[in-house]
Every structure is written in structure tokens, then in C-alpha cells.
Length: 116
Image (cartoon, rainbow, N blue to C red; front, side, top):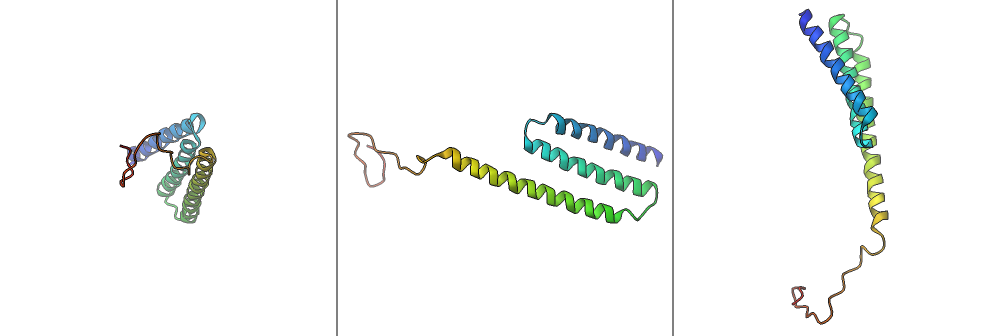
């Protein structure tokens, strides 16, 4: 059983180091947000492991609050990024987006709308 706990500690440690690397060197805000969410999940795993190895049951409240905060944070960041992306797309589109393209000179437009 001790081997299993040591293996769990090692796996959580490696996962935490990799998540910290992505958080530090991540190419974009979304990757860093996912890395931060992963760090929260790893912290939840560490608290669970401490609870199991120490036979403590008083950490359940901490786990519930941390899980709720992690979910709400990820949801809020996704919503903010979605709103910002929609605003940037609308701003970048400019006034010419809604215009219908003009037909070519001499083109006969049939009922189907295709140039002939």
C-alpha cells in the first residue's frame, strides 16, 4: 500500500510540474487558464491523498469549496473570453461585412442568383 501512495505522490508531483511549465510558458491565455484549472485539480488530488493517508475526514468541506471555486472560475473565464472574442470579431469585421457583393459587369443573373 505504501508503494501505491508513493506512486500517487510522484504522479501528482510530475503533473504539477508540467502544469506549472504550461502556466509559465503557455502560448496563449486559454492554455494558461487550462493549466491553472489543472493545478486546482491537482491540489484537490493532493488534499484527497493527504486525507486518505492521514485518515482525516475533516477536509471534505475544503474539497467541496475548492471544487466549486474551480468550476466557477473556469466558467467565468470561458464566458469572458467568449464575449471578448465576439467583440473583437465584430470590431475586426468592419462596415463592409453586411454588404452584398456587386455583380460583375455584363453578367446575367438568373432566378437562382448565379452568374451566367
